[in-house]
Length: 421
Ligand SMILES: [Zn+2]
Ligand SMILES: [Zn+2]
Image (cartoon, rainbow, N blue to C red; front, side, top):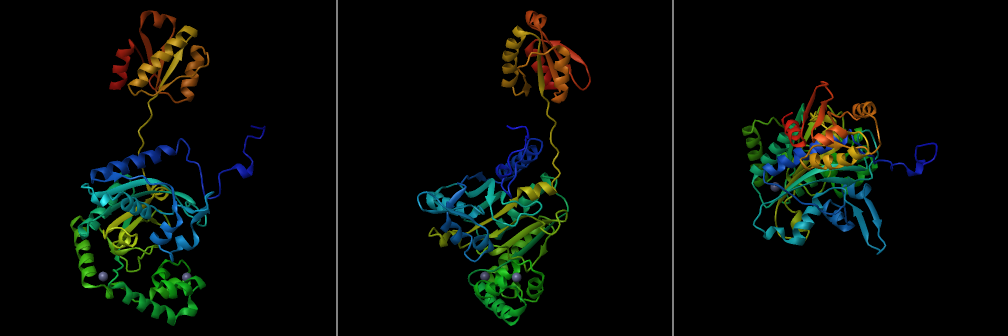
């Protein structure tokens, strides 16, 4: 590297991406661990799908009229001339994997979770990235609204573990294929009457998919959308019952919720339940997680007629609202004095590491004072002193850096002592 240690500008991380460095990454690891533990306790298993898929998967799955597909996908042609896309969301990949491997024929319940990066060519803004990260869960083959309630309850349980407080749960029903066409027609009519007040984008949506007008962030469009008819007045009996059961169970779980009739979410595939959990700590872009039911997606993929439901949680946003207590690191610094002790130290480090003790070994020859200075800088909890005398006796000194206290013992005795402390 040159004198100027910063990389050339064109070699810096790409706009909308960033590094997650030690010091911050521990929170990510803690979140991932808590998410894994939570989901597994509800019978979920991890399903890892590739980061890129054929573009058609998302056009079909995410929906060709959604903002994601029309504006935000990272699509490229590979050397074989295929159109591929970095996944903008996870659900279509899971659906594809189930159909491809016929997981629906297995006896295990189809409850899956996943954590990883997603990619959207979005306008970068504070806390929003083009490579962003999600925790995602999907369940298939269960129609009962009890599952919708359980998923919301599980999301709430995870947020509690993450120390996310001040949340509000928004729920809605967006109807099904039986009842939504009438609603769409009513929206089209309402939007048509006030077409001139809408942004060009929404004028187009008024024709193609008027439900999407609810996603628009333009103030004038929001005002128009506020006067639109409400979906609740159009739900069929089945959708109405499903929604009523969901609300009843949320009450049973004593989970406060708020019915938001404009919560349609930015995706085409939702049916019946949609929900979001928002945080008062996050400002305008305040949804930490959101999801819903998609009972027709699998069938639309040419797979079996199996219903699905899921949610995605933005990891960056969850961490912005989370208060995660991290356990302190308790590392052992190995202070070897002289060449022989240096070699013996390697074997000692191996012994302690094999039992799960974090052991810091540096290969530079140092005196005792320099070792302690270094151990201090590295914030080691303990220093193990290995000199010629100690080697002869097979007994070593272990110094507690916080209290200055010291104990002596064989390596086995010291390991025992570390375990207790
Ligand atoms: Zn319906
Ligand atoms: Zn608009």
